[in-house]
Image (cartoon, rainbow, N blue to C red; front, side, top):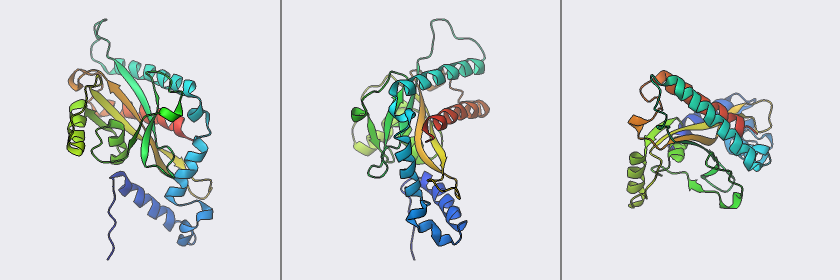
Length: 239
């Protein structure tokens, strides 16, 4: 008897999709044919090869500007959610980050590819974090779970302490909404269109969760906000 033990929760849903993809081929064994580029790993690498040559990947200034534009739209949406206006001197400090599953041929990690804090122009010194449970990184947490995550700085610090037995350093950022991004990618094969997880968009706030405009108490509004992040992430990460 053989057992399949996934490393991360997102792999369970991905495995089911791959089974359906294979079963839909004629014959099903065609899924294992490397020249057809059907298998998950081959499609993921194919996405990276194409995206790494795209303007979204190579033009750091344009990518930064796109996130800044999205953050402006998010602020407008948060204003619409709010029952009463904030005081003029009580602006919530927010930032957006785009994390990418870079170079999946050799690496199992996410890389901070862009942020509204400023253009990241040198790809050789971009921050990267390995994919692992209990990383203490909001974006990694959402990616390995395979679903949006709203977490606090305290939760992330506790997870990281359990993993590394070290206390996290101080951080100004206190609340994080992270959504994993999947793109529909055929690997160049017109007979298949199955999603692959390729990154995460994270909205971070300097406000505590109970003081933030992120609408944690409204599932309807949270879905709207998460979908905004997903839409922008897919736009930027589709090769």
